[in-house]
Image (cartoon, rainbow, N blue to C red; front, side):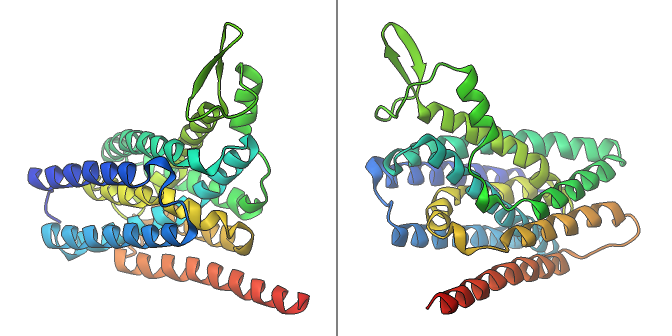
Length: 307
């Protein structure tokens, strides 16, 4: 696979900046908060992610295109876990929907910064010390077991937010779009600030799992970061879609555990068994598709039983 030309990085950064501006301006003042709008925006973000796959394919070759698609699918799948946590945080802090977009936008911006740090440091570590791949694989397998055992849709609180609530002076309720307010001479953090910090810390913890998963299909920093970025960009819209269907994906966490297990095993055995990126794509799609399909069948059967 050929090295990434500098102009491709310029195109990517320019496109990423433009998309962030579009996302910020298109939803100011609570616009685009309906479920229908969220579905359309989700489809648009998915389309952009796949379109950039075409750019990678043309620029770096078909193998690079396959690697991007596999890494993007992994990150897109695992981002569903983030969405469940976002829902728990906003519900526990009683954050009105009209203020959630600003918090999500800042959270996504922060995630892009931290993911860049993890990816470039991780890639350097893998190039210097080959045994790091086994560490990443072990992390993924442990995380897969945790995700398998814990249904994120049933979480009622967030440990990070609960800890911050005990340590910081916090206002009782949201007071407009402000993150800090002054009350009786004291500066207080608002629930919006707690939500933002909770989102950032949670994403850092998730990145420890999801970034190594992407390393299971490629070590190219351009492919890794661009696939991460395009998977993360659609989180706001995906949150609005999933928030209304959180109880309908009963078996999704089993699918996420399956993806993490596959990525962990792939990293551990890569030295002896090479799994092509296109086969990785097929496995990821099959595992997540089976989990979603089983969830929908379960929902339909419960609906018929109640009827």
